[in-house]
Image (cartoon, rainbow, N blue to C red; front, side, top):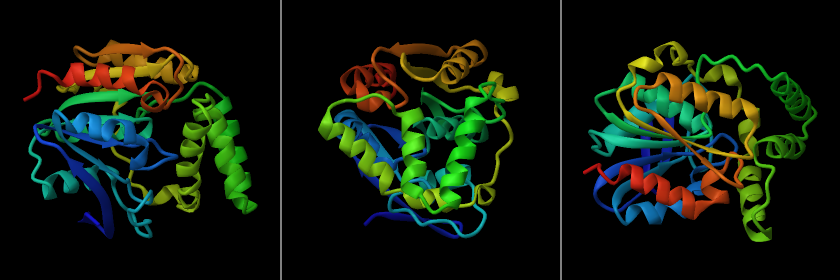
Length: 260
């Protein structure tokens, strides 16, 4: 199994292909397997890396304070990647933005899929309701019920029995993440007031069926990140790369085609 040692633990990763490096960062309920429809497809033209964030998949569950941004930098360093594109979904997109601000000489391009944004204050009170309901379920020991609540909000669409079972199965295999204290993760400086500093070429991708707050973040990024542009994909929720893989792959590969 390929692992990289980071502060207080190890990260699992997979690597394939040759060419310009592209690093895939998964969303928060799943692990790197959620990129199955991209990993081989992108590897036909690029050096592709996907990895499990701390606590997810086959990476170590944290018991001490850690930094996702530094974890990513350690990974790139160990793999001798000096410059790359980051493709991140949800919290993976948020991490990609934070990393691009921290290491502008390394991150040359960003593909932000239904991204979060550090420093952004959510206006929708529904998020607070969700967080409280999930907290209560976790406190009661009902981790599966807590994950079902999350899935109902972030991945409500259906793509057929096989794909639906696969999406739910990966999430359920990561139930343990719901018990990891949020206080262990180091909070980076907020990206919101620094978006104008981003130097990376930026593509924002959102599904038309995603929640309004994600669309608000996407529009804010397009407005404040120099040169950023947005693509909205029909019949997709947060998991654009799962719901519409052919469309998503074409968008991303076309965007990265000038990277050599």
